[in-house]
Image 1 (spheres, protein in one colour):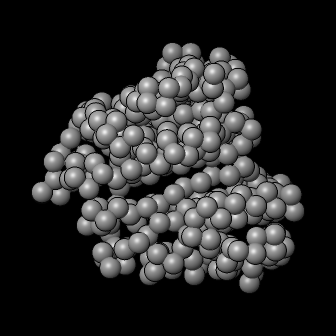
Image 2 (cartoon, helix red, strand yellow):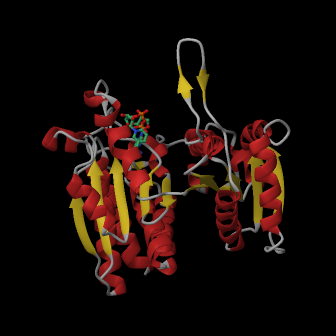
Image 3 (cartoon, protein in one colour):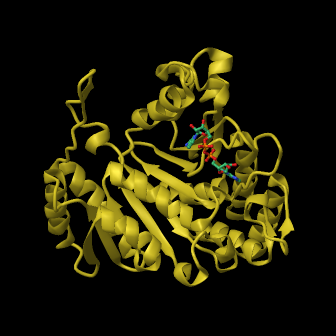
Length: 354
Ligand code: NAD
């Protein structure tokens, strides 16, 4: 039986996770399978109970799992703790390191009926359906040496062949199941690490003759995401550029509550793109869709349950098309639902579309 570790975390984490688990129960009953689900503590809530944001027991459970489903961590209550005890650094970053994550996938899709909440004009965002494939384990965030003193700060941007080959292959594989376009984003007009990145990506592309590869400088990519986002299918990029561009592309949707993510490594991690949303936590008004779609990504990428994942996505799409909204998505004509009501209508729809 496949083992899933569930880490609800802080803020809206437990509320949105509850709805994702309801959806997972529908999948279990319809597909006639059973997952072994174990709960673990992480983040501020773990610090409050155990004095650490990442207890040993949670680490052990994660290492024994087939996939980790995370809510979110952090909040103002824990902001003044030292880095090793903070939910984000001592909890989430430590978890990412433990799982040896090397790629972050963030799909961005604009539903027709949600175009009005995008900050861009509707004509600009028609047909936007892209995924950022961000290298997660190397680059300037981890490159050595790094130091800071009173006179200087230094970080090192470095990429090696093995790392670029691995992430490039993943991007080409993903593109082969989509519109077959990879845009590799770098700064090869200035940075040596980017010149190397571009060279290796070109080499790998020879193994994927049916995928169209283009290269774009990161400054232009930032502009193109606003001017013409529908040109992108798969954006392949390094750690820091991906960090920035994936948040920029998230803004196209208009609410963080819609955006799932998957991070691939020794054991994959699935989590919403947004944080713990302390401003709305505990009110049963958060949007659970990002967490539900993260669950769909888990079915697809960890368990190969592609049909089941598509069915969840279809159920979400239909519910949105029918005008159901949580507050973050609402306009005056919408049917506004609480977090738990949104989970319920998605479950009902999933049963219908199965
Ligand atoms: P945030 O993503 O939590 O919230 C930004 C805005 O988006 C808020 O207005 C929030 O209400 C809204 N929002 C986010 N998710 C939503 C949802 N599902 N439904 C409806 N609205 C939603 O970012 P922030 O306010 O900068 O950070 C809050 C805390 O979360 C901080 O402690 C931060 O460090 C942490 N954080 C955690 C993660 C993570 O766990 N992966 C990611 C980002 C931020």
